[in-house]
Image 1 (cartoon, rainbow, N blue to C red):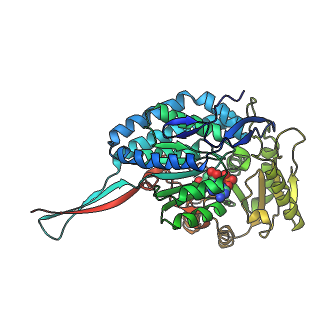
Image 2: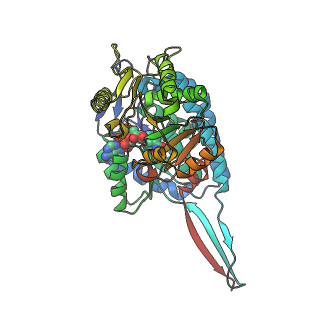
Image 3: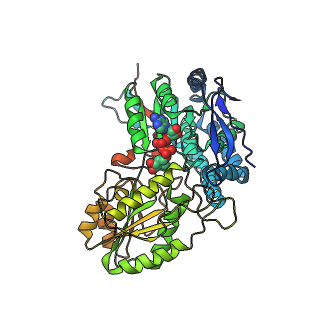
Length: 478
Ligand code: NAD
């Protein structure tokens, strides 16, 4: 059933690794072991580092047009292999096949987009103070890069790093999550088969802390890109500071969804329910704090509960399933803890609140109302299918509450008023803002957080720029 061969990619060769250590791979929908993840040894990591340094010296000299060819082929392979990779993704991560296929299409689109954008790594000519001087600000690849990626978008998180780095002329070592290795391997095979040279792309697995410490301590990589939680972001930034590596930090979020009294309520509820239960709420941009104007509060709760009740929960491979399991068993306990704490502080459970009575790490779509601002789940990233609803009265009050957390990744505003839209999108503290919809990340749009949700962006021209540095050349005619 699970067909991906789990290997490390080092210096252009797929290998089982030299240490012989491994981790079990579990299908979260069945709790069965479906594979064995090879762990990289220190020697494997050193080989990957040396190869990344070596390959960089030639890859950076290739033309953007050549890299476009390679990346376009990779995008084509991702698209052609979509059905098999989607199956692997669903078996490891639990999300529905439909969601997995959508994610892979995003990967193909993003790879193509970066391939194109690599041709536009423009510098500029700066008028000089003397007629015999020409001043040029040139863009060049920053160097070998390191990418650490979360399991919640096992294909997307990995592809955005690989495609951006390679398009810019960098090489990259990726450490995907050990929960979703096969998807990363399958994506890596698309790039290898498309003609990425030996060493330009490496994929390693194993215990995250020692691997990240070893890789980041090396002087060879010049850049760290993490998609992961805020605590791990702080840790990796500290490690990167020793060698002053540049970082891109795509970290956790706790997105407010503000529903004003004039919102189109039915459409708002449809969109928010779809966004909330996508990937069982395990999405960094998932709407997590629902602030609903008091005049439409009861209507919103009734409509949202009705939609939540209809969500089809099950094995993502099964036809019609909309929501799969959580990634690991211990996350079920986290959900319970959030609900108990919220109830103890005055919230009421309107729907759900329990693990489903079946194999797999399934948690019921859960709706809590009147959740106080000091409930833990209103402050810590829930990362699960829990909807927390609370009423608000005025614009200033809701903006202040929405901005009260250290996070600042996504936020959503629902209103028909142009002036409320403008005022709210100006006042809200987040890297991306969705007005009357929730699709806040496309291949061509910059995506990233502010404050403790991180800094820097993936996608958009900013995503390519993250792998470029500026060199100023001043040239005097003699
Ligand atoms: P995580 O922080 O535990 O792990 C992320 C990656 O970091 C993994 O590849 C892991 O192996 C690696 N890592 C390196 N050193 C580590 C260390 N010392 N300890 C732990 N991991 C280390 O995050 P996760 O649980 O895999 O993913 C969920 C988090 O990712 C959530 O907070 C979510 O919001 C965030 N996320 C953010 C974005 C974004 O674009 N902002 C996108 C997806 C997920």
